Image (cartoon, rainbow over all chains, first blue to last red; front, side, top):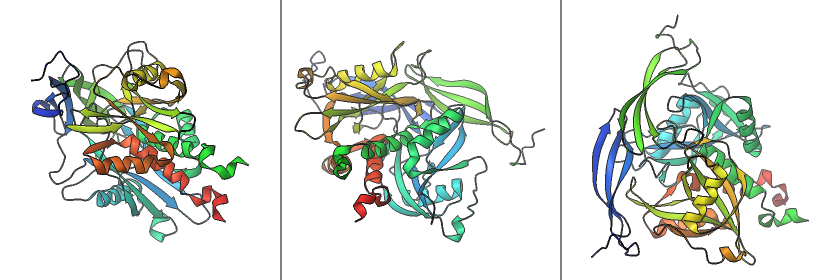
Length: 215
Length: 215
């Protein structure tokens, strides 16, 4: 028998029920009743999108797109746009929801084309990852895309979305260029963007990892 | 005069009003009415936490904590826990909400101690970043922390949270170790964790950035 006063009791935590508290067109709020690892029954407030497709694991995709051009530095293709939840502009990787029956790879190439005009080629895709797991069940797959910038269709890309500004950031100056943008204007950077830069900086500035630089 | 049929008209997008649709104890759902860059008035469904402090810019902190020990590889301190919104275990950086009057740095050291038992030292903090800007106004600051693992108080760290499992991942094998965990059990990795690994891999495997490796 589980004893609520004894936190050492261990059980496999699991969901008992999910009850709708409120539902909009795009987003709903649920009360999740679950059994915690001590065997206690508890509740949690959970946000879900109403748009998740039945045969799709992730709600959306994020796209890390590298623009590769002769005689140019490799650049990461970023988007700046007004985001109503934040009431200001954000700097993000291109991203969007996955349509019914669509793969993450197809969604990534479609969203990249719509938001930036670039036609890319998928070189990698992550497992399903969560975005804010204490708040929502929302998930994304990050798709790594290469863009041949010398291809004629990518020399003057034409966007389909009017209100998204495309920003190219050189890969080898990624973090400092993000910081420059933050200095120039009121903008909120997506956490994934900042952490991608931190990952690159971490790798570059770990002398132990690069013994050749130690001399 | 703004003409709704002409998407070329540009104006500075802004919020007109935010109306409560539903409110729980921790989370609320609002309808945001805003003017888009074409001058059209539109609505958006926005999720907010009810817990954001008045004098705090970010809802929470995420902590990239590096455990540094003599004769060990540097390790990233990760946490595995059951997350009711997802109904399963997740692999995340330690994280938590910022308390009233608390700085991001103080919140990071407090949460790290509670969740993992480790006492760290802040070495960097990011600006306020957004987590899922198409859905919510939720924000986090990522705090980079070093842990002296040779310090006596960090040799046998004692957690204050019973249900969080601490997992140490060697920094130089970060992404492959994350993938190993995914193979072994049903677990969802936080997108920030995966992207941190992708950033490191991107930096390592860019021969152009490491000309010494070209020989």
